[in-house]
Amino acid sequence: FYNPVVVDIDEDTKQNEKPLQEVLNTARTAFSCGKSKPINFRKKQLKALEKFLIECEDEICEAVHKDLGKHRQEASMGEIDLVKRDLRHTLFELSDWAKPVAPDRSILNLLDGVYIYHDPYGVVLIMSAWNYPFMLLLGPLIGAIAGGNCVILKPSELAVESAKLIAKFLPRYLDKDCYQVVLGGIEDTTELLKHKFDYIFFTGSSSVGKIIHQAAARHLTPTTLELGGKSPIYLDESADILTATRRIIWGRTMNAGQTCISPDYLLCSKEVEEKFLAAARTVLEEFYGDGDVKLSPYLSKIVLDRHYNRLMNFIKGSNVAIGGSGDPRTRIIAPTVLIDVKPDDPVMLEEIFGPILPIVTVNSPLEAINFINERDKPLALYVFTNRKDVKELFLNNTSSGAVTVNDVIMHIWADNLPFGGVGASGMGAYHGKFGFDTFTHKKGVLERGLGKIAELTQFARYPPYTKSKGQF
Ligand code: NAD
Image (tube, rainbow, N blue to C red; front, side):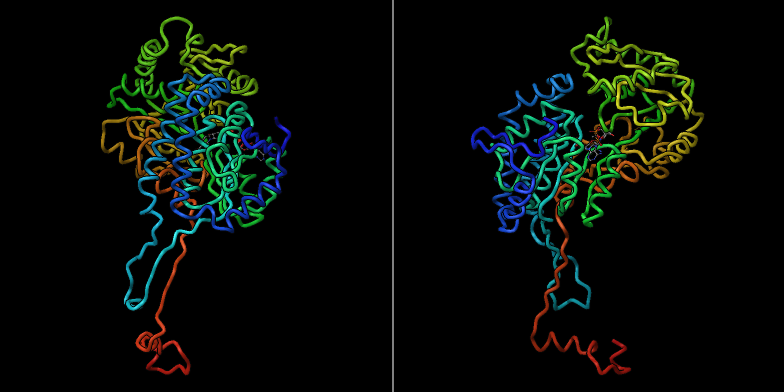
């Protein structure tokens, strides 16, 4: 599974392995012929993508359960519903989005036509991470199809069952020339990246994001990087602590904390910390009962042994206020809260990506803001407060991909908000119109008449240059 560069295991057509060059040539030819461009064709493909999600829902949930132990409801919500919502929104709006826009004209162009066309880039590469193997691949695909591009999809090799399912089933629904799936590990991806694409959309870690950016630079290929990092929470005494804690614990334990916008650490005062810990014990019992939480069907597993060991090492040697245990056989870690955490503790030096929440105490919102601003720009920032001045302080003095006030993660569900990072957490954005815009080049078009009146307005630009012409 890891070695073949390209696997197209569509049993209907018996097209088995295809050499990479053939895959790329097929996409290039399809784009050059204009196959992916007509609006009706794009809509048909988006509807087919929706059909795939509806008809394969059971298989999708099963694959995600095998890969990550995700509960069916969590899988439906994160992998299917979110994508369907974006699909329906895009289908509804696409005809409008795709129309050339006529911006306001200045006096210089009063007699001209001035337009912005939304050109597809061409053949685009979409690479994704393993933690939401369907949503992270199919979400950007919506924008790429809507924009009229041909697409090479590269799922993560770490969500093995999901990647196999995508390679096997998706080609049964989508046009086989315009949209193709390529499987493979690091070696194969390195080979893939040597080829020229017209756009690269990457979801993954910041460290691999740099590799992708360098590979793209060799061909001057524009890139969107959806990366990760540590997304902080600030919680103050004015918030309803029980409600805030329920939302925070949900966000930190969903998919076992393996969510790019999962709240990574908590900044609060010592007094708020005490209230938070009491509330967290109540909430965890509410969610997972009073037995061994590791046996709960609602907790996902950690994707690999390597990551399980990395996470358990964070816990070892830390002051554990809640949880702290793990089962290496199932790779399930009990939701864990760490206290007395120092800024240079290992758990604070990298994205955790697990169900562990360290608390760093601060004495004021300003101290929290300084703490955040001294570090890489987060993908998401969460502020829990009922104080308008505190909310404004964070909104106006920090930089992050997004902010949610008094909740976590839910900004991803808000229609019409861009989803993306800034600085080390990424560049570019997608979802809805932002996805369409990401995958289309904005081509400025000026159209001028050749008639006498049009030409009269141009006299000042031609030699011989005279003083009077210079005044125009
Ligand atoms: P990753 O960077 O290891 O892998 C992502 C993709 O890159 C995979 O397809 C993989 O095959 C490929 N890849 C890995 N190493 C490579 C290399 N050396 N050369 C070329 N390609 C390579 O990330 P991951 O472990 O799959 O995902 C976890 C990370 O992704 C976390 O940091 C998380 O925050 C981030 N993430 C971000 C978002 C977002 O929307 N911003 C969403 C999910 C995950």
